[in-house]
Image (cartoon, rainbow, N blue to C red; front, side, top):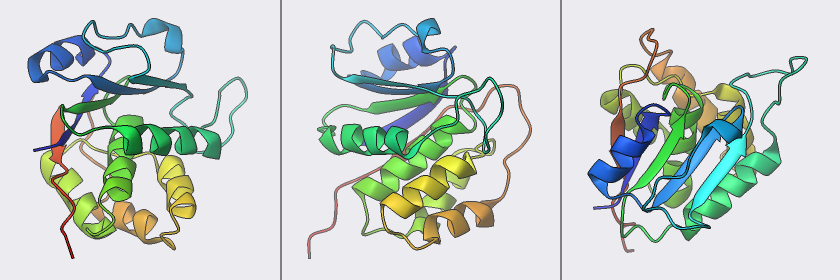
Length: 175
């Protein structure tokens, strides 16, 4: 079953090895600190460099719609034959938003509220970056449903590093 795994930078390489991931999405500030896992081929690691902020802040890079468009293009090319990892520095905010956005894009037949609840059920620490979710909601034409769903699950438990988890994407139901 296709799965999106979420983890911190510290757990990236061990997670990739453990689950046999061949595709990785990195959402982190100072992208130079990230080494691509050995089993991940060139072109199968998307690395987006931006801070974990929700509004402009001097000296920091705020995520843009271009970042979200790159994420969506990458995950829709994912063949779902091996697990996908989405990670950020702590595995709490950017990565959980990236996993939620990816799930909503890959399985539009499942409601945003269902995906948000699956995220909360899988991770008590997930606190998706609302700026990323808001931009994705607009790009995907969800009319605020993604934002409402994330607001409904609330902030996750405080932590230094998020609890690693996976979302089962499954196959799109046939009509």
